[in-house]
Length: 359
Image 1 (cartoon, rainbow, N blue to C red):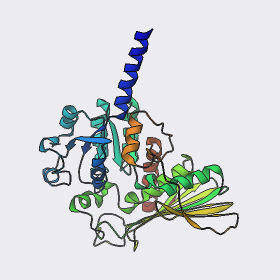
Image 2 (image 1 turned 90 degrees about the vertical axis):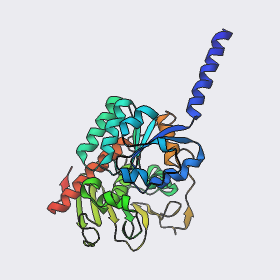
Image 3 (image 1 turned 30 degrees about the vertical axis):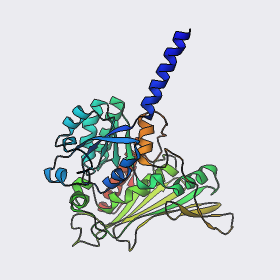
Image 4 (image 1 turned 60 degrees about the vertical axis):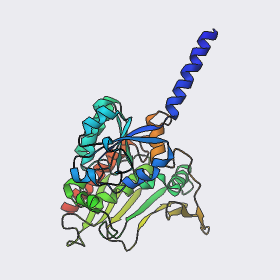
């Protein structure tokens, strides 16, 4: 009996050791400006970068991970990096089109994937990625900055508790002055303004935030129709893609307006949610206002999120290690983000035809 108990304790200690050990991360692509998020968290010790794969020789030799990792950790081939370094998860910092390539390489090897928003450039790609995830039992997580906002989670709790009453309108504003105007580097701009590599312009880059948040707030509900207007205000700067997008989503009893733009005079990622009892204004990641039952709304700091729900890499580690359970409508979840891509594709089609697209 004592021997069985001892074996059980050894097994438990071993399992706990694996759960607490640093997450082994491989990097696929280096052309995304959000790579700085990974670099900024390298010192924490909750993950270790075991290898970097980048096909472009110039990008591979000149990126912000060079000098922070040994030279032998940089590969021209993703497959070679995966087979030699054996990461638990790969984070994709290439173009949106690049996500498909990464998933196709990782899924058969049982390696989980995190991509930057949105999941894919087309609904067909999103469905293919979903099928691969199901077949090989991997997690595919989509990372949005707004997922880690204290305010968005507090707003979600208000909606779920019914404090705003029946939600009938959501307005989401996202964007900035433009990627070139704010100084995005040449690698980032090389694909961000390419309709094939990015899938579109502002409609993809910033429209995805609002669609993702609405899908989460409304419990994964699919809109009845999608209508969109895409503008091309800066044709000399962005000749190939839209730079201003307005997307209208029709739900049963609720209208969602998503405004993503490279033409704002300032940076913004804010949202209004209106209900039958009141409304909430999420001003940024920490500050918000709440107006309920006719009362005056004071601005306040939303409650701080607890780990691992406050950070993409802590969340990723907990997710792939089985320490948390993700709901289909959660912002990072595969199901949410397949629907996001479907809606964005419908928005682009609507803008071309001038008609609403029924889903």
